[in-house]
Image 1 (cartoon, rainbow, N blue to C red):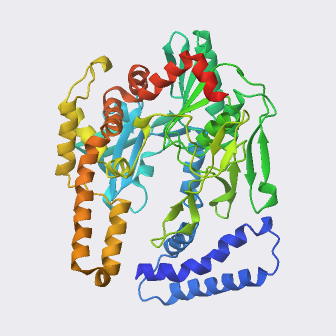
Image 2 (cartoon, rainbow, N blue to C red; image 1 turned 90 degrees about the vertical axis):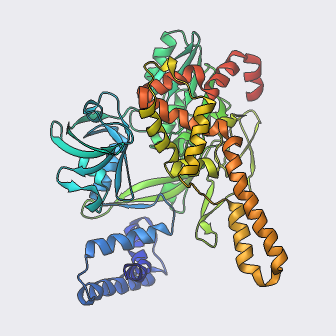
Image 3 (cartoon, rainbow, N blue to C red; image 1 turned 180 degrees about the vertical axis):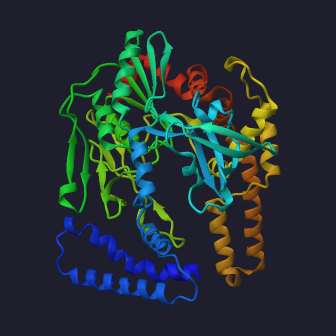
Length: 543
C-alpha cells in the first residue's frame, strides 16, 4: 500500500520543486498549470492524511514523495533535510566531530569500512569489517535513518558501540573528537627528482594543500610531478579551478557552464598567479575520478599542460548548486552542464533518455575536439587518458565484486588469517588469488551481464517464434556466458588483484601505508615515473 501512496503523490509534488525556483524563471503561460498542480497536491495530501485507514506520518509521506519525484531526474538532484544539509557542509569544509572512521550503512547493517589512523575509532580498537549492531541503547536494525549519524557528536562526548567481529560480540567506548578530512592525505618523493601528490577530494582545503605539497616536494628536489586523482569523486567547482590554476596562467579559461537559466551561464577563468607553469606533470585518473577531478584532468589535457594516464574517468559533466528552502532544508539541484576548454562535455550517462527498465542510457556517440596544440580528444564518455593503464580498467565483473562486498569481506578474513609486521613484507601470491577464487564460488556470487539480459529477453519474448531448436541454442549460449564469467576471474586477474591488494594493505598499514606501497609497486605510478624520465616521449604526447 505504501508504494501506491507514493505513486499518488509523486506527480503533483513536481509543482512544488518548480515553484521553488520560480524566482529564477520567467513564468509565462505555464503559471496556471503550476498553480493548478500545487492546489491538486495540497488537497490530495490533506485528504490522504485525514482519511486514510491507518495513521500516517505526513513527514515521511512528503519525504518519499519528494525523493521519488527527484529520482526521475538525475542522481545528483536531491532534497536535503536538516541533517543532510549538515553532512553536505561537513563534506565541503573537511572538518567534523565524530569517531573518525568511514562507515557504510546497508541492509539494516552498519559496517566500519576504514578507521582513520590515530583517531577515536582507531584508538578504541575498531577495525575494518566490524559490524556495529548497537549504538548506545539504539539497535542499528531498528533505526530507520542512517545509523552512522548517531556516531557523530560534540567533542569529548562518549558513545558506546556494540559490534561483531569474526562472529564474536564486543563493546567499545569511544570518545568523540574533531576530525580533519585532508584533501591531500599524502605526498612524497617517488625518486630523487619526481614528486607524488594524492588529491583525494575537492573540499575547501584542496588548492591550498596541493600548493603546499608542491612547494614542499620542490624543496626536496622535485623537478617532475605525478598528481593522483584516482578515486576522487569531486567536490567544489571553485577548488577544481584553483587547483588547475596552480599549473596554468592567470586568466585562462577552464570551465564554461551552460544552463536554461541565463545567470548560470558562466565562464570560469583562473584568477591567481600559477605555482609552476613548466614542471612536467602526469595526472592519474580512473573510473572513480569524477566531477571536479574531471574538470582538472580534462582542463590540463585540453591545455596540453599535463599527460593524463590511467583509465577512462567516470563521466560526470553536470554542476549542482544548493538552493535554500524553508525550515533549514535545501534542494541540491543540477543547474547546468560544464564544458572543458576545448568545448567538450564529458557527461557519460543520459538521464533524460532511459531504456525500458528506466536506466539512464550510456552515451556512445562521441564527438571529436582538439586541444590547444591540436591533439584530438573526445566528449561524452569521461576523460579519455592519453596513456591507458590496463590494470585500472573496470567492467561489470569487477564492479559487482566490489558492490557485493566480496572483495571487502575477503580482505577482512585475510587480515585475521595473515600477519605482516612491515609493509615491505607484504605479498599477495598466486596461491592467495586462488583462495580468493574459491571464496567467490563459496559465496554463490552471481551477476548478470548485458549479453545475458539480451539473451533472456529474446527467449522470453520470441519463444513461440523461435522454436525448440533455437531456444536450446540460446540456452547453450547462456551456459557459455556463465562459464565465461568464471574464466573472467583469471582473465581480469591483474585488475581484481589490485583491488584486493589495496583493500588488504589498508587493513594493516592504513591509507598512508597504502600510498607508500604505491611508490614502488603501483603500475600507474611506475609508468608515470618512466614517462617523466623520457622527455622526448612526454613532449611527443603533448605536441
